[in-house]
Length: 189
Length: 189
Image (cartoon, each protein chain N blue to C red):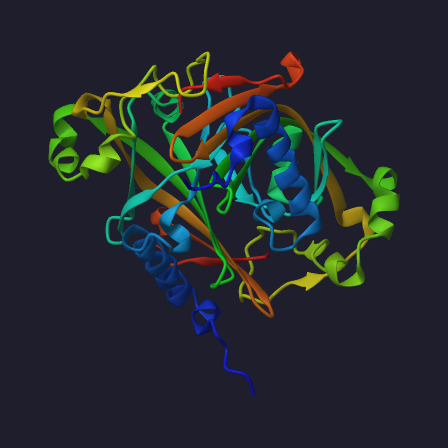
């Protein structure tokens, strides 16, 4: 008899807890699967966009996730126009796919002064690229970094739903919704 | 003097070639980073969605990518309403992020008979889930698989643009567009 390596997949409550264990680990461990989720947004003209982000905070009680970015990045302008995001994590060792639907709030300026103060010097260089991220340049390195709080934005994702798929000997899929108090519902995988 | 591990990042043509090398490797090697991209779509009411898919074909000349799925999956109905997809690959060893914008065509029935005939028996079990994927069920395993060609769909992604970011000692970002003959343009990262 082999021991089930993922006993948490069998029940809704334990599966939900495992999702947050995975997300919290992503914040604290650079090598964890949830460290670098893919963030999907929609452009003002309705096109999908997706890119890697770094997970900076995961709060299970509030069901909120934080991401840091350049205030002039395309994702900020996309989220200004349509404040909805989808976040994707594939946890290989857990055989677990986590798909998050969230509303996004963009915080900047004085609202993020405390957080900016704690961003390490080396990390600050990734904010305040001149010209702004995505602008055409003649040569690959025709840009500079002018880090400052005025270039820093925090995306606060208020989770609305989590769709989870566990690929075990049997596949299990469930959806957890804020509107249902996160009780969960099994779905056909 | 250390040898640059990613000399292909320095030029537009070599960077573009590396993208396709990575994608083609994903088709043939189960462990390659591009084996399981994240596919983003937009729901009919304009919400972003993203999930893992398996890359089944990568054709550089035509700039097309193929994905197999269940004809009743949400991504198929989303792409029927809005035939645009974004695909995301993070190649860790290459320090390379690949973001693809594409138009999606949905092929099924007689159009995919040849391809279905080559899908291994074990893989066929993932198509034709009853009830369809995403339907609520009472217990986690209240579903069955009824594999058949009528449940099988092929998503053919016609690539329109590729946004590439290489995180080296210097970061380099470029965009390649079908409309420009894939010549490429450096962007601020």
